[in-house]
Length: 344
Image (cartoon, rainbow, N blue to C red; front, side, top):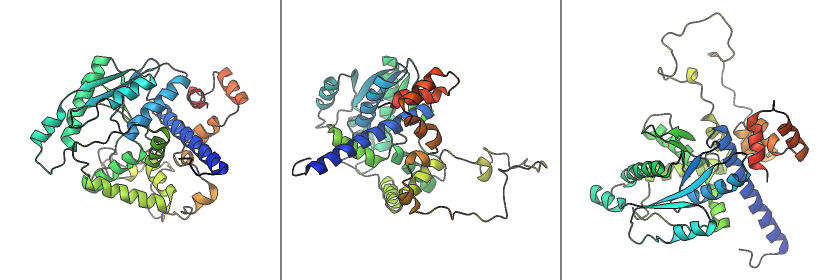
């Protein structure tokens, strides 16, 4: 990668790679703290597929494990679905080389899917259901308290729009949920990380990527369409995409139309002023948003996530500020966690 580059170019590349690593680690830690994904004493099962996202997830969690103010265990789990030509030695060799506990679960779901799904039809739905059930069982057998998946920001946004366009629902992948069997906590620590960063990180770390050939690289055309739409928007203005993502955590049920979330039927005037009440005759004003504003101000994605006050200022605290926070028990525990986890 550094062949034929000048010393100045090599130094810039080094700095860019360092910034990339810090950014991914920081945003992962932010998500973990925001949603209380990992707690003291947890045993986290990291689901490893052999793709770039799950490799990055494991790599970052191993880094945070060394820095966190809490103790938690990691175990990497791969489900070998017995796909023809699957390089079964790649993951064990890699996991052994980095010194992480791991378990390879051998289950021939490939034959089941091929038998039940007609040729040319999408296999993803059945494959994911079979995989989910097996991984829940493995989590029980290994005594894991959390199941970590490698979905990232773009997965969450794409799922939101797929539900919006094709299922008429405002719904997406949450950063944390209880499994459908009611027994497991599933977490998505990469929820704040954009896919482009994970692509660059995989190249930097030279992860031994294993492609999924179960469906012959079958494309989910609807998801691909939504992904292209998001990439076009981000090219126009990254702030637009981050604002959509931010909106998922800023829901106003009283200003939507779901009668199950808000009691519109029994809504009556109270005679008490409410700044959150409807301003029915006011025109919406978006004049303060400019696609170019981000380029001028260098707005960070922490600010777009509403984290600038909480996380960014804390992460930039010097050693003296960090010490005073630790010595003052009245300081928010969340800040202490972020300082300890993110200290680089």
